Every structure is written in structure tokens, then in C-alpha cells.
Length: 233
Ligand code: ATP
Image (cartoon, rainbow, N blue to C red; front, side, top):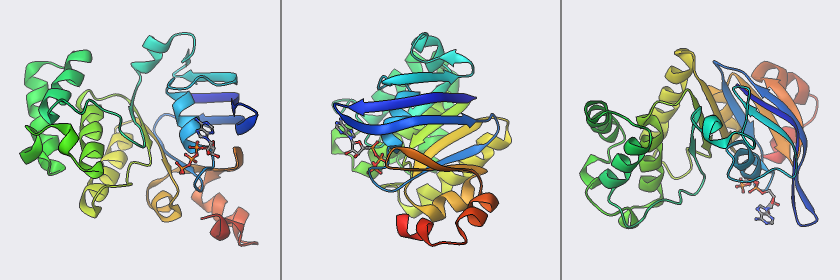
């Protein structure tokens, strides 16, 4: 579903991401794991076309995000780490705006907004301006916006951060269900336990380099001999 071929990102002279090769398969929850400043956000921003890579190729469902961004962007929904959304809109105006962009029918959008806003307990605030929302509420409204148009691939940057435990639990279950229906989830986290609970496979990034990629059993085997994993998180 996602292929990263030797991608790198430089900020000036600083190498934030160095020669990453990764494949994320259809039908898996893939965790992108690393401590603060490791390069997770930079990588997800390159995958989603928010940032241009300095070098390398990024394919989403075999579509090059840099060559055919509009087509590639139809394949996924992206929840950034700090939701930069239309603060002057109300929650419901924002969701309708997203539904318009993705041509979600009136009937479908009403049903989904009702269901998801109840689930994430934000229904009562839908008529309030987003600028009055807390970080967690902004996170929820962006998540609902992504779920609204049912993209096959979800890309979520630190999605649990700022969410209350109940909403985080709901989101984890939804990630699993999405994948069980044959779809794909890529998400980043700096919390090892979160990754251990829901991922089929993980990649560990540190200082811009991939240290490991594999399933959880393989990860434990690789790191059981030393304590570098515990030290990192
Ligand atoms: P966190 O979990 O703290 O969000 P991260 O793993 O997402 O961290 P990135 O945000 O990708 O890490 O940052 C990787 C490195 O690149 C860090 O050293 C960061 O300071 C640096 N960096 C990020 N954005 C910029 C920028 N616009 N200009 C210069 N350096 C940057």
C-alpha cells in the first residue's frame, strides 16, 4: 500500500530522515515508533505530500505522491499531530466542508456525523467554533473528518496524544476494525505500549534512521539481549 524507496529529508544541513526504505502492506496496522525528534512527523508529512522529500520515491498504491498528488491523496486520510484546521468554522461546518470535498452524499454524511460525533462524545460541541475547542477536541474533529469519507488508508500522526482514554480506546478498536475489513492503517507513536497493543508490524526510527522493521515477536527477539529499546522510550 505504501512504498518508501530510499527517502531522505534535510532541513538546511540537518539530516532529519536518512535513506529510509519501507513497505507497508494492505491489511495491516503498521506502527511507526520512535522517541521525540526521531523523524516520525517528517516522514509522515513526506508520505502525505505535505513536505517534499529531499530525495527518494514515495508510492501510495503504486501512485507517486510527488508526481500525481491529487490521485495519490484520494487513497488516504491524514490526521496530523497538531491539527491545523479552520478555527473560525464550527465543528459541523468543518465536517460538511470535508464531506463536500470528498462528495459524501447528504444522507451518508448525516448518518456518519451523527454516529461518529456520538461515539467520540463531541456532538454537543458541533455548533461551537473550533477555536474554542481543546487540543483533544480538535484531534477528534479531524479524526471524524477523515473517517467521514472512508479512505482505505488511514495515516495518523500520534493520534492518541490529547485524546481522553475512552476516545483513545474507541479509536484503537476502529483502527483494528478498519484493517479487519481489508484496509490499512499507518500511525506514529512514541509510546511503546500503544504499539505493542495494536500493531501487526512496527518500524523503529531514531535520529532519522530505521533501526528495526518487523512484527512484535521479532522486535522482542532483536532487543531482548540489550536494554536499548527501553532506554529509547
Ligand atoms: P516528536 O515525537 O517530538 O513529534 P518526531 O519523531 O515526529 O518527534 P520530527 O518532528 O520529524 O520528529 O523531527 C525530526 C527532527 O527534525 C528533529 O530534530 C526536529 O527538531 C527537526 N525538525 C523538524 N522540523 C524542522 C524544521 N521545519 N526545520 C528544522 N528542523 C526541523
